[in-house]
Length: 304
Image (cartoon, rainbow, N blue to C red):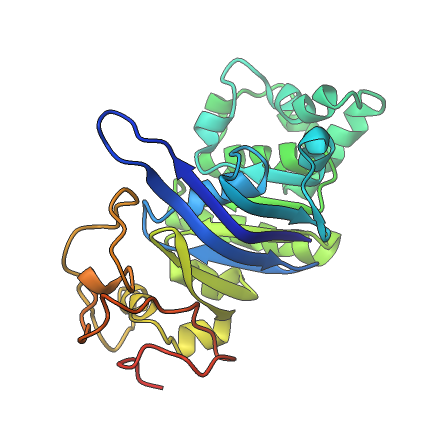
């Protein structure tokens, strides 16, 4: 449904700082009816990748493909109707002056689809779990809970009948009691509507609860990918192991040293080696390929 092929996004030099390689040669696929979790620390490039996939950030190199065809800049309007972005902060995504009806109706209006608008908004709110929908029409964002605000944002995406949703940290700003409800909603949209989804998060626990496949990103690149069971139960990359170690019940705790990833200073060789707890001689000279269970190549120090 949606694919990044050798995709790169380089931000130009600014304020005396060198260019930033936010996304660097990424290959990633979201298949029909599939939920893919894109996991990584803040600053690893995952949000930039998400925005490039929905056509909001122009790639420096590589391609975005939709249903197997390269994204045509002349048809971005039609593409964005089918591939919708759900932002992290619903409070920031919603206009405080707009009521719920107008917020959900904004997309269809921009695409010239005003006919049957009331029924379209009603259906989108119902699919997003806001029932009865009519009770929410005249409410404004400040009258809603955080979970209800996020459902309104999701309803705004659903109002255009998309085939793919790209959700950037969809539960990061929500209370723990509400996160499960939103994740359950995304799963139900996949099951009931056949939607595909890319869910961006820093939390591997979220991937366990919602994803079919996982892609782990570090400093602009995917370092490991596989099914959720393969990656979370048999991680092959030391960075994945470090992310897993902070989850409740983990048998080990891996503390990463050194500076967080800086896209303006990409190290040679394996880009994780300056922070890797098990680095060995040669890590600064050899760049690992993307690790997956199908490959025979793996970090020599990761237990198999």
